[in-house]
Structures are given as structure tokens and as C-alpha cells.
Amino acid sequence: MINYIWSFMVVFSVISAIFGGNMQVLSNAIISSASDAVNLCIRLGGTICLWGGLMEIAEESGLTDAVCRILSPLLKIVFPKMDMKGKTAKAISMNVTANMLGLGNAATPLGLEAMRRLQGENGKKEKASADMIKFVVMNSAAFHLIPTTVAALRRDYGSENPFDIMPASWISSAAALTVGLTAAIIMIKISEGISCRK
Image (cartoon, helix red, strand yellow):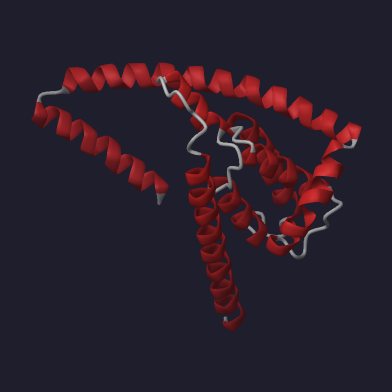
């Protein structure tokens, strides 16, 4: 399905550029976007290596165990069947912690590691498990205790008090997480009910 969406967007963009007389703008955008994509891959690759290494250090030092123990009561509500002492729970805990601190660049490689481990536990490899779906929602609509990235952007653009958005960030991110997880859980239960009837 996503292939059709992307194909439609590309064809629509080209047709719009032709009829709007903006082919030069489209060509420039394609070239600059390709360059930006390569730069992003390089930056993200470095970030993944850095945080992947720090994750290993955190595991060896026992930090992931401590973080997992603190977050396990909350994670147990979302992932009732998960072993809270397992490596998957630890990876999820580290991802949640990074998101709470507003460290999006750190959360991404930790999230990929958590998803890799969830897929390893998935019985049906061609289909996302319920835990994988809930984790994606948690990662996408994460609660931000300290909106570090947004505050940094606000500071770069001249804000005198970049962290004065914290109350709004707490409310909006908590609401997004609650609604997202509730919708995911309802959809999962509906899907499981349909599968059982079949």
C-alpha cells in the first residue's frame, strides 16, 4: 500500500511541476533532498553506533536493570506478558527513558534495538505482534518530561525561556500517549476477536 502512496506522490509532484512551470524547482529539490538523505544516514549511523555502544555499557554496568526496575510497574500495565527482567524489557525501558528526557536521537537506536528484540520473540515473523504495535505507539507518542530537543530549537531561534513550554509539553505528550495506547489496545483486542471467530 505504501508503495502506491509514494508512487502517487511522485507522479503528482511531477505533473504539478510541469503544469505549474516549476520543473527547475522540482529538479533542485530532488538534488538537495538526495544530498540531505545521505547526510542524515551518515549522522544517524554515527548516532546508532554511539548509543548502541552506550546501551552495551549500560547493560554491563547494571544501569538498564535499575531503569527497568523503576519503570517496570508502568511497563507491566502495557506489556502484561513480558518478562520484566529480560533484555527486551530493558531495551524498552532505555528507549522510554531517552524519550522522557527528550533525547530523540538517543531514542531512535534504542527503539530499533527494542524492536529487533521484540521481533525475535514474535511467533509470526510476517506480522507485527501486539507488543510491537504498542511499542511503536509508545515510541511515536512518547511522554516528554524534559523536551530537550524542542527547547534546543527554541533557544537556537532566540527564545529567552526555551523551557517554558514544559507544562504544555507534559499535557500534550501525556494526552497523545494515553489516546494512542488506548486506541492501539482497543484495535488489538478487536483484531484478536475477529481472528478467534475465524
